[in-house]
Length: 266
Image (cartoon, rainbow, N blue to C red; front, side):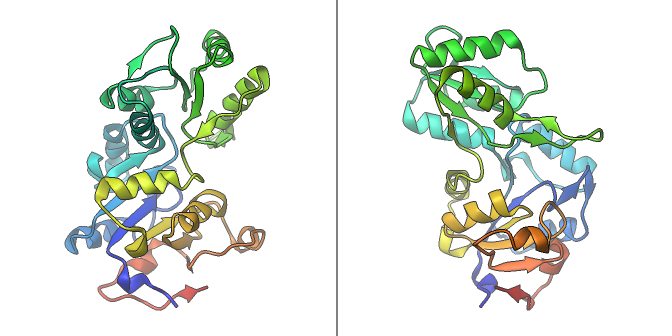
């Protein structure tokens, strides 16, 4: 039975749920407005650690969606929050863009390539052989290896691009050390998001488009999970997995209502 009528807070993935190739998906703007009207705390989540919340807020606005930067939670922010809890005022050597460097700075970390506590690998389109070599040597010398998200590839108009997970695999192969990965499907990504908005798992819903990251992490974090079919997963993909979301919807437009609607509760 659906617990949707008990949900007081929402977490939602961004790409494939609210937007597709910088176009708002049907119902996305209306759903965000509904949450604002009902004063329901929410966060828009992304595993991509390249951009700051301000960048993403501007990108969403260009797609026709109003999401303030404080309502966006990235794997970079989750990584910075995790490292701050582990070692306040620590240091890190970072391979990544403004998303992760800004988040670590704001968490009180020092960025250095000299004897850092951590090597942090995030999303970037400017991987350099020198930086990867430095990361391998620092990890081999004892720095702890952290990765913002496990995605091996990312989308582009021309086809897949190598992403954070692919570069992390290269580093692991070279130094023999496995990283700790903070982003989805690690449920820590959701737990840190819950902490940010003061939510509890038992009355929080999670909307995603991927079985292998969104849904499994949502289940492990104890959330009410909703899979929408506007992104990666279709029924054939769903059938590959031994777990199921609480609900499967055609798109977020099915959530736009003043009253909870009946759905395919699993």
